[in-house]
Image 1 (tube, rainbow, N blue to C red):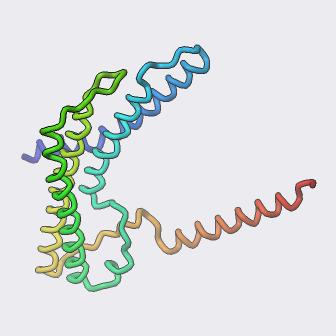
Image 2: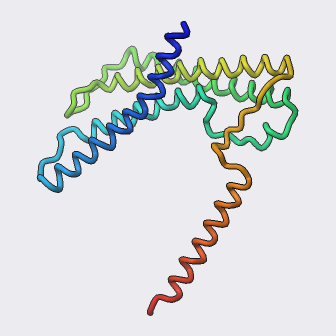
Image 3: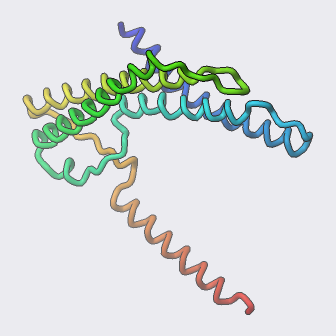
Length: 196
């Protein structure tokens, strides 16, 4: 079971990177072919679109697994551990309810709709609804795991509140704000020196 988990985690970690690389390469090749050789790549936009859809939905699985979705941590990090755990349980229950509701709506659509193919690549649009369903299912499972972890932490009092601010501490935000203000002052001084 752990081996399967490792393989799935490795796939979820590497597929979005590969898709991002594919987007960059296909767009670069298409632009180069179009403007230098007057020969664009047929279906490049479709391939880039398909890669972006996969990147978003498969990447969302990894983000949910790692607990890195955007969140406001002001309340969670300033309350007792058990309260933070209860807040995390509530948030994860809301996430699960939203994902399950979307799954319930998407499943009949996936099963009963006659999907068309992309015109140049011939790939069925049903593939993307399947990727969406897989993504929603795995995100719901990871949210359930997070809710169970938080419930155990609420019961035991040993729960670590993970900050989801993606590295934006108050010092970092203050530094960023000063940087933006200085840049604005510099741009204003440049524009005031420009000849009229």
